[in-house]
Length: 443
Ligand code: LLP
Image (cartoon, rainbow, N blue to C red; front, side):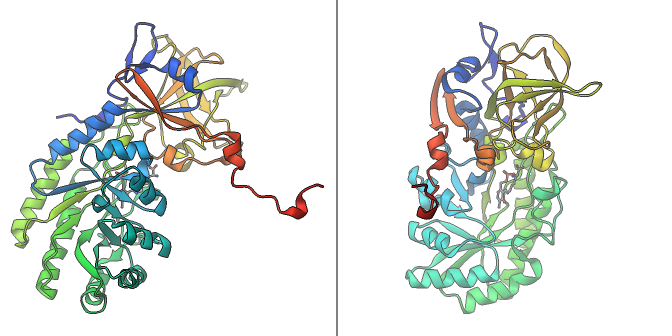
C-alpha cells in the first residue's frame, strides 16, 4: 500500500479552472499575491494523511508511541496540528520544548533528545514535566541526576546508544555509525547502567534509544537496529536483572524530493519493524516493549512547498541560463549543505510546454546559493511564481537571516482557507535584538 511520504507533491495539489496550481483549495498565485514571496505553504490535509498512515501502519503492534521529531519543522500551529493527531514530540532544545508547551501539548508526551543539553534546558525539561529524557553521555547522566535531586524528582530516562549501523544516506545525516558524536557506545552501556543503578537514584531508566540516520530508503536496516536494541535489553536483564520495557528506534524514513526517488512506504517499514520486533521478543525472551518512533521529515516534508518570484536572469555565453528567485539558501539550506535536489513547477503556467533547461539561483551572496541545477521549465518571465515541492522539513527549521534578509512567512492551507501560522519577519524584527553602545551613538 502506498503512503503519503511517497508523493512528490502535497496530496491536494491540482490545476484549477484558472489554469494555476492550487493546494488545499487555495490558488498559489493568489497566496503569493496576498502574502508575498518567498512563502512557505503547508497543506493540513497532507500532514493529517501521513499521521494516519503511521497510525494505521503500526496498529498491528499494541504499544506504540509516535513522537514527531520537531526539528523537521517546529511552530506552535504545527505542534497543535500534530498533537491533535495523537502524536507526542521529540524535542532537542529549550526553544522546541517551549514551543510545544505554549502550543498546549501534553508534556508527558514529550521526549527530550540531544548530545549536549545545557543545564538550563535540562532544568526547563524537569520543571515542565517532560515525559522522557534520552540521556546521551556520562556527563549528562551525572548532571541530570543532580538537577532531578535538587528538584526532589525522579526523572524518567532512556539511554541513547550508538548501534554501529551505517545507512546509505548523506554522511552529514548518518547518526548510528560507530564513531558518531551521539549516544553511548555499546561497550559503555554497562558502566552507564552501573551508575544509574548504584549512584544516580533520581533517574529511572525505562529503555534504550537509537537513531540511525535520515532520508533512509533501505528497509532492512530498521530490522538490524531492532535486533541490536532487543539483544541489549535481554543482555541487561540477564546481567543486571533490569527489565527495560521501552525501545525507541528514532526516525529517518525518506521522502520523494525528485521523480527518481523511491522511498519505501510507511506500511512497508511498519511491516518489517513489527515482524522483527515480535520475532526478537520471542527469540530473546523479553516482554514486548513499548515502541517509540520519531519520524520528522516523513511527517512534514511532503505537505510543504515554497513559493518564489522569478526575478533577474543571466545567460552565460555558451553556458548555463540562470534565473534568480527572491529566496534561496537562507530559507532552504539543503541544496548548498547536502547537494539536495528539488523539483519545481511554475504556478501560473504549469501546463505550458517545457522549454530549455535552466538553473534556479538564490538571491544570497554566494556562488553556492543554487536551489535547483538544470531543471526543465516553461519559458520563464520575471514575475512568474515558482513552486518548489517538498520543502516542509528542514527548510524553515534551518532558515537563517543570512545577508540580513527576513525569514519568509508560512501559511497553513485547508479546504480553500489559508491562515498565517508564522508571520513574515519585518525589518524592525531584524534589528530588534541589536544594541548600540552609548559611545558609538553620534551626538
Ligand atoms: N530522532 C533523532 C534522534 C534525530 O536525530 C532525528 C534527526 C530524527 C529523530 C528525525 O529524523 P527524520 O525522520 O526527520 O529523518 N537537516 C538534515 C536532517 C538532519 C536530521 C537530524 N536528526 C536534512 O535536512 O536532511
